[in-house]
Amino acid sequence: MSNITQVVNVDKTMRTLKKTVHASDLDQLLSSTGPYTFFAPSDLAFEKLDKGLVEKLLEPQNRAQLANLLNNHIVSGKIAFKDLKDGDKLTTVNGKELVVQEKNGVISIGDVNILPREAKISNGVMHLTDMVIQ
Image 1 (cartoon, rainbow, N blue to C red):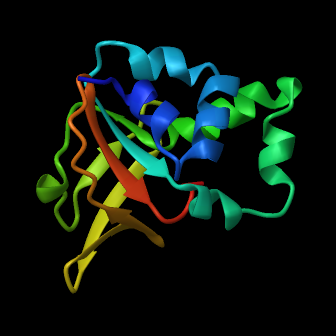
Image 2 (cartoon, helix red, strand yellow):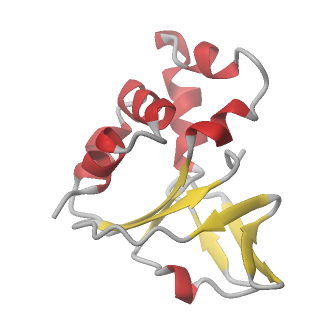
């Protein structure tokens, strides 16, 4: 069974995420025992950011900013998609509070839709997002 970093490394819809995870050194955290819940932005999610932002964040001097942005997507513990309930408050590894909303069967955090992803992962669980959590 793969860990979160290994899943990101081989997923063809997460090429940008793979670059950012490795550039920010979060591949170490996401390969560790965990467990973690990772809200993983797809390539399409990164494309919705301001033009040039990802390239800027990938520069070595901006590593801390990039890590902070990605940490907005990581929650300690394993939270299955079916367990995300309206009004739940989740705290990310960098202390940001995420509030889960459910409307007409759609689960979101703010404007960010959460999509189920049922990959078996050894150190947690991963859900896809259609936007980057900022």
